[in-house]
Length: 211
Image 1 (spheres, rainbow, N blue to C red):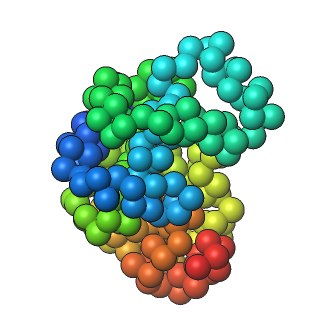
Image 2 (cartoon, rainbow, N blue to C red):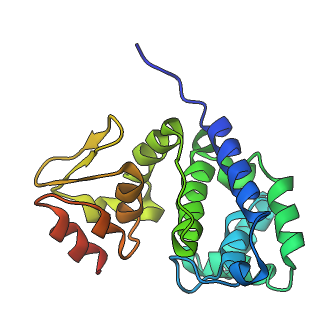
């Protein structure tokens, strides 16, 4: 029996949880670095939602301006919100809980995957763990392992990933096992997250991440 995944609803729920977290942060936490060390929490929020208000023309213009470089396109989006206060950024999040435009792609999987990973970039850096609903995690893991912007393919090539808290595994070769959240953050290339994993393939994955 095949279960249909409503990724758009999952993305909405993930963004709602992020909004709830953001309302609790202190000014110092908004300025703190995330796992993407070049971005503070406020920068991460700007990045996540900077595509929401772009129509097709605006999206094309941003990528042309960036020289078709995704990293530069993201930087342009962050810069566009550089002078927004935290209340403005929170309002941006709350006004776009339901993805649209680019992030609504693949039935909402872009928003869900980008949102869940970056939500954890914020939480891990601030020492604020949470329990992630299994349906969101499973959908994100499945999409993240092949989504080109994440670059997971080259990191997990020749390895078997095994979630110890969910019924999920992928790949062949030496095993890397651990909590699903740690697997996700490791295949997304986040430094230090592989320390939460174990197995004969752990060192290989750590070397591919670079730390």
